[in-house]
Image (cartoon, rainbow, N blue to C red; front, side, top):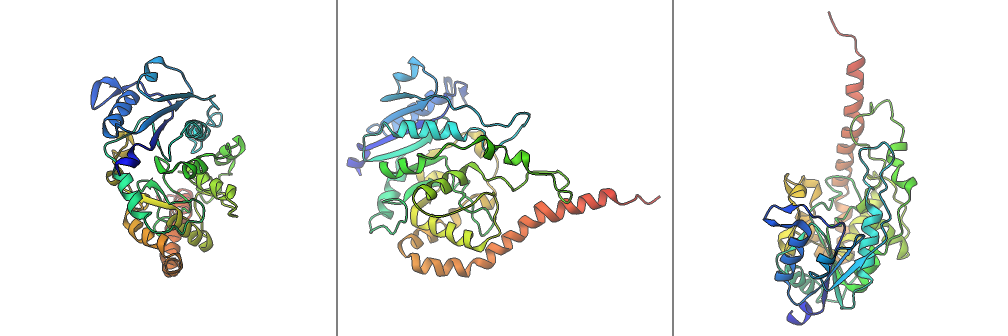
Length: 332
């Protein structure tokens, strides 16, 4: 393992966060994260990939990459967009990874840091046997936090993008995504407010940024998949998503990885459907035995359709009930 630690490059991508870090009032967030990661993995190379130049940070990293800022995709007049910074994320990630010369690479946010190299141990342990991957040479490590289990919430291809580690070629393949279009980013706003939804709450018409990254990688790898909405009621998408996950990704908890996310992302208890940890061991076994795992997924189809029922209740039946109740005449 010591040899591998010398052959790893960690790419910090995103905006430079200069606000004070809660763990050290004397340092900014990004500077603190770079310093903590350097202490945890002193032999690894560190690249900072952003879209602004700062001489101070050049001294903290091995390589500093300044990319052209593609700008925000937030639609005019909108206070929310799942796609707001997707192109910034793609450009800064791919730009930093393009400068990697080591065998292994990790991608991490500029407001997060690594406390230890547990992700390397898990990667080596799970990739000892020949891989049955369908996209990458070896399964890549991602964070189970915010990776959706379709058997509990019907969002396929929704794998967290906080952290990514694997062979450099594999990580580059994942992040060399095509830029998202403004048209796709504004689909949330263009969706008509259906009468039975009453215009309340989030609408499941728009694909999430995490889903865009996964499906775009699949399409560039020759896997035919057309997925344009956040939620699916299609059993084929469920089975395909589960098999893609098992054969190509290794979901680990933040503690297993050694990943420390900013408090604003972890101040609340993660909902059960936003965590793959419960099934990650089963999926790891499935990656080694895809044929058997497909049978397991088929047996779990009733759980998936039960999650579809939950989504229908939340996005359709409950808003419809509220709409009808508001129109009922009040009794004197």
